[in-house]
Length: 182
Image 1 (cartoon, rainbow, N blue to C red):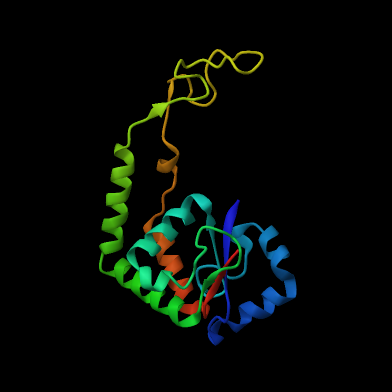
Image 2: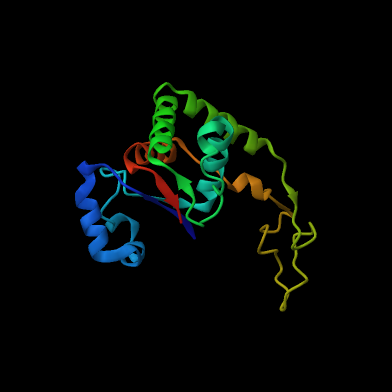
């Protein structure tokens, strides 16, 4: 399951996107394999898609680093159609792009990922840290959740984003004319 973010009034230079999108419709677009979708890296203003595992920390980062801009959207972590207007989206995109270009974004992502790597494992709740499941029949010899180690990575460590994700989102914001999160 992913997050689909649609540009409201993307740049006129990307008008070909809207005609194709209107012809095939959103459902047809979303059913296409991502590599076959018509508006991808070269046409960033119409559509941005990522997983929840990536979007959640990106949205948290935006809200923390740019609270004034982010306040225009109250539901960053939902697919209710909230988003930003054209001016705020363009300003957010420019700020994100500046952080990417001057290296601050890469540094912040590296620091965040290093901190997540340091979070200790937690006892596996499925096998009660024994390495063997007893709650399912027939009993497997090894816990299928932790692989028999008796420990799991905490859920928070799964949510990561990278520099490429932020580059794509920055370009999307700049060209989107505002956006809605679906």
